[in-house]
Length: 107
Image (cartoon, rainbow, N blue to C red; front, top):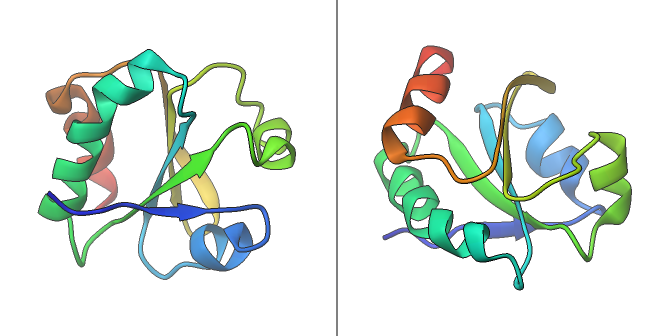
């Protein structure tokens, strides 16, 4: 499985908004049980999509301004950014097939 890099408020613009590839952001927290359930799926997809989609994580507790900016009220929330715009948004645990179905059209 691929390790997924964490982004922060300080590098969100460069790593996500200005990225050339589509970016799937996993808004997560260490205490969140559904986040732990979805983590292996996110890592697996990061490996499968390598070179086509960038996958990153954002710690919800450490980055409250990004959470507010994008209206993230629950975690896990996954957002797909393409060209700096949100193309997909999924909140709560999602099976791998559902994540693939939402993201694949944007690859």
